[in-house]
Image 1 (cartoon, helix red, strand yellow):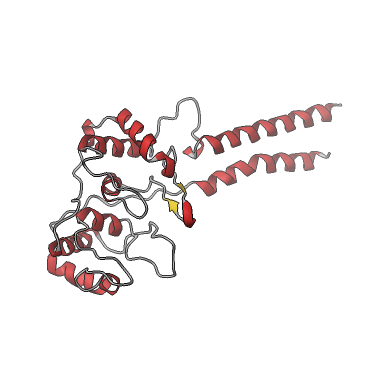
Image 2: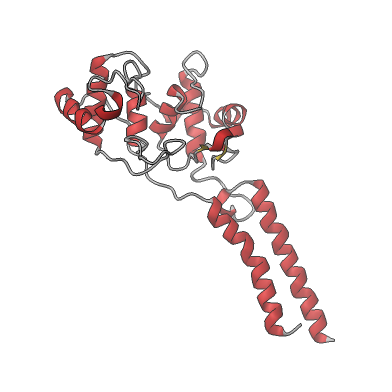
Length: 252
C-alpha cells in the first residue's frame, strides 16, 4: 500500500462518523417568547379570516380540511402558530413540522385573543418560574415519560406511520410547557392531574438544560446520544490501528 492510498483510507474511515453526526444534528432556532391573551380581537379576526378560515372555518368551527379550534385554549394556538407548524404547508405532509413562524409576536397574540373569545375553555399559556425548579426531578420525569419518543438527549426519533418525534432543542421554555399541556399531534397531553405545576417546571428546566449540557470528561460530539458517539469512538480507534499498521509496515 502506498503512502497516498493509506492516507486516503484513513481519511475515509475517520470522516465517515463525522458526516453521520452532521446529518443527525438539528440546527437550533430561537423560540418565541410566551404569548398572552391581551391581543386585539378584531385584528385577530381579520388575520384568522385571511390565514386560517379556509381550513378551520370562519368562526373556527372546523371543516373537512381542518379541525375545530373551539375550546382548544390559548396554549394550543400559541404553540401551533409560534412554532410555525400552522399555517400548514400544502403538499400532503404526514405531519406539521417546525418552520419559521408566519406571524409576528403581536399578530400571534391577536389570533390567540380572537380564538379564545369564541370559546374560553382549554389550557391557558403556562406561567413558569424556573428559578425554583428541580432539575434532577425533571430528568427523572423526562426519562420516564418523554425519552422513549424524543430520545434521551431530546434529539427526536422515528415513530409509527412515517411520523417523527421532533427535536426539542429549538423549542423555547414556553413552547415545551405548552406541548406538555396540550399534547400536539400524537403526543399525549399531561394535564395538572398528571404533572403538577412544580413537575411541569422541572421537566421544562431539564429540557432547557439539554441545550447547554455539562460535558465532563471530553467533547460531547454534538450530543447525538451514546450509540453514534460510541460509533465515532470505535471508528476513531480503528483509524488509529490503521495508522499504526501503516507506520510499522513503512518501517520494515
